[in-house]
Length: 171
Image (tube, rainbow, N blue to C red; front, top):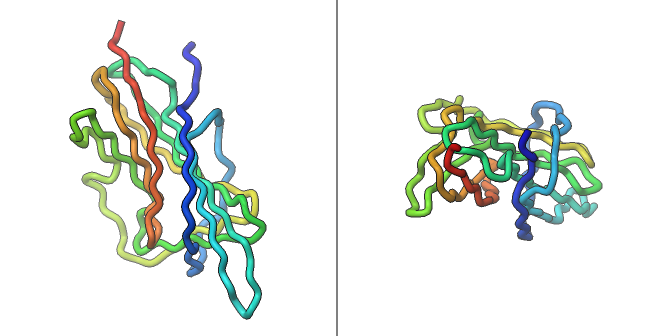
């Protein structure tokens, strides 16, 4: 059995989190280890009361070095690390996306390609400490090589996180 782990990378950027609409209830993320993370913080004032809000994104690429042509599972997790409820606004029914990019810059797998999304405004609500998880699965796997994985939370102002994935030759 192969060890399930991920690569680590962190970034910090300040944004105002949109507060429009509500959506599905948050769910707890599944198994996690060391994750690529992006923290986004912002301050919002409503009725003269300021509150701190923080969204942390984590990207898991599954096994540290899967073999070529074996399925690969990608997980994007959004966690509310703040003290206030976050409402993430979306301009359509799509909530996330994944792209896998080869060393020469070619997109070799794109989760949203060929999918259609309802053109309706929506939102996801995250209570303090709660998480939402979105998953993409590359059924056919990938050829051996080094890839850049980009996961995007497709909010009105999209937020992306990246990781490196090394796929080993079969054998």
